[in-house]
Image (tube, rainbow, N blue to C red; front, side, top):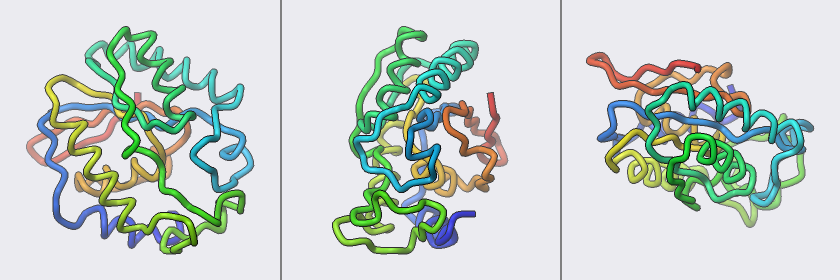
Length: 195
């Protein structure tokens, strides 16, 4: 669990609830970056590294096998956008860049160790945790209200917010780079399947 994760989950699970029109959607965290590989808090402009590009291509193949994705909603950060392009290219579906699906802005903490990162921190030049949660929930609500079956391509922080807002328990094994996830609504709530 990330430091400050309890507060992140509590804020994400608080009203307003996330009530997708879609009965199914997919989520894909972006491929690896140099910052991911070295556990550094990243700025928005970090691109995929070589391994991340290969991961994006493999994830696209797994999502193509699903066969039902109709559009891609992607963070506009280069690492997520490039990952989404690989998926959209292979699936031949439309892609929309959504700046509000970007990872939390960490201001002065960029470049520091992500292993010591406390999500409750309020870094100068950064975004507060409540602001990030509200932005992510709002962007996800819009992405999941449009007809069809979307694939959201974004970041680990966004994944945690979306899962908590849907009442799904987060597990660390769901957060590796470029791991395709399928969310299905059932009578008992939402389930998550690793593809």
